[in-house]
View 1 (spheres, rainbow, N blue to C red):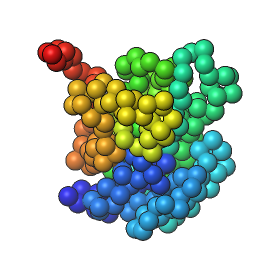
View 2 (tube, helix red, strand yellow; view 1 turned 120 degrees about the vertical axis):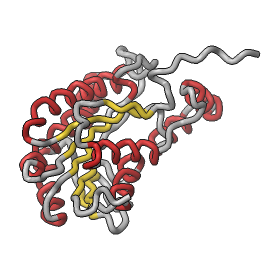
View 3 (cartoon, rainbow, N blue to C red; view 1 turned 60 degrees about the vertical axis):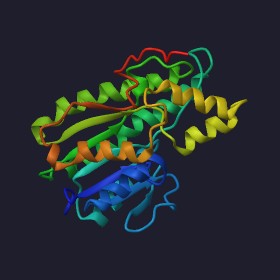
View 4 (cartoon, rainbow, N blue to C red; view 1 turned 30 degrees about the vertical axis):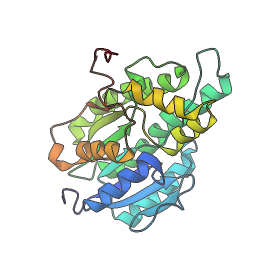
Amino acid sequence: MSDFEGLRALVTGGASGIGRAAAELLAERGARVAVLDLDPSPADKPLLAHRADVTDDASVREAVAAAVAGLGGLDVLVNNAGIGAQGTVEDNPDDEWHRVYDVNVLGMVRTTRACLPHLRASAQAAIVNTCSIAATAGLPQRALYSATKGAVYSLTLAMAADHVREGIRVNCVNPGTVDTPWVGRLLDAAPDPAAERAALEARQPTGRLVSAAEVAGAIAYLASPLSGATTGTALAVDGGMQGLRLRPVAR
């Protein structure tokens, strides 16, 4: 497909995991793509790499300005940078709550704020936020993470309403458990990594983790000009976890 031919895209957290998969897919489909990341070095050509800390407004504005200058404009923003957290509402101290919100929610605010003037100049403007199934399903040991992703979900709807008449579409993807480096580190730290992986796989009706490429495909769908009537939508990419209720397997 070449539906992004001639378009310019910016992906935060684009040097690894979901962000890198999305950046590479957009480039394959014709876009010129810049990535922002704390460590952008893993991003290979043709991706344009820029260092940015989404918790620092000056850093974000500087990186966005450099990226847009290099791209020659901006049509698509993928707000993907984020971090995880484990525990119940009792387990995470205040400073961790502030840090995760600063990255997962305010990071999107800072990046979008810096990009909006450029997106308003585009005839195909789209924003896709990486949310999570944790925003709509109660998951154990994810109180802080779920709270931030619930905020991202609400933020997506509010942004869609605010900017639809400016010609800017805003949507989000809600992945299930994705086979990313972060999930890999969680599994490695578990007392029984194989059993933990099996439990995560069993939680999804497909019986396996979601791949980064599958989430990237959903991001590309929402960002594509072919989806010009889609805004204010949350697209679950979760192996059926949110919507399906399967009967237990007979033994």
